[in-house]
Amino acid sequence: MTSTGPTDRPVARNSLPARAVQGRVPSRLKVSIASASRVPASVVAHFTDRHTGGSVVIEADVLVGADGIDSRLRAQLHPGEGAPSGNGVRMWRGMSRYPHILGGRSIVVAGGRPGDKFVAYPVEDPAAEGGPTLMNWVLELRGPRPGEGTDGSYGPVAVDEALAGVAEWSLPWIDLPELVRESTGIHEYPMVDRDPLPRWSFGRVTLVGAAARPMYPMGMNGGSQSIVDARVLAWTLAHHDDPVRALARYEELRREPLNQLVLANRELGPEKIIALAEQTGGPVPAEHATAVSEGYKQLAGCTTAVLNSRDSWSVSPVSP
Image (cartoon, rainbow, N blue to C red):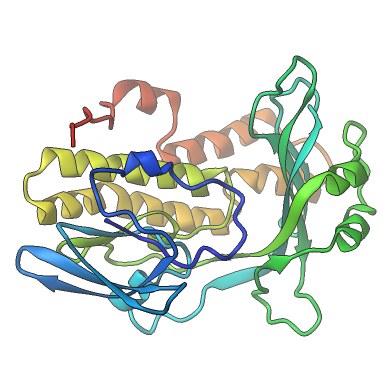
């Protein structure tokens, strides 16, 4: 069973398809976790229906907190942790139909340090060769909005405000005002994370993704590592009859490497190369850039050698 937090915040990515869990675990939408209690052979989760305010109680073999950086399950497991901490950077994110950039499969990272950066990349192939595609873009700004705390808040951004934000930018292969105008919605997110945890799993309860180890969005590892979390968790559950041992093994495999990645992203991760280029006013020597890049890949477990040599996390599907 997966615990999900409030979903009224805008998100940039779709959730896992419902068919992935249909027939295997109870699936409910628009409920938020209130509390969980462990009993000898199961876990009992108490949810609140956000439509009616009523209580929903579900008993299951395991409870997986996948409810993001503001995870209520994490707060129950680690009380007193407080709010996420930020670096003072705000991110404006949008999705736009736009003619593909450069070769159509290019990622644009322009600028220097966090708070002075623009990123754009395609998230699907164009319907027709050379035609428009769906682009995800991010503009980073430093400092809070007037009247806000240093960690900012989530919320929509008006088109006029976004146009003013990109007015200072000039990129030869992107019409930034057009990209903004064509966006279906623009939302602001603070760049925040949480300190690494000493423990994710408590008996039949565990955390995955941003609920377990929210990190700054460096090196494209926030979402991708969440997918790996889910694959490793599925693998350990498939290979251990005892759910408690399965969750403990999942944590053994994932927690410490991911905690190190959280700390590395605070130091800019692979984007340290961009900051160095800005600092020196010119290209970073190739051997230095390669060392930074390869070191981060090793930390993230995504070098070619590692990916080609380790066993797959895939498991065989089981009929309901």
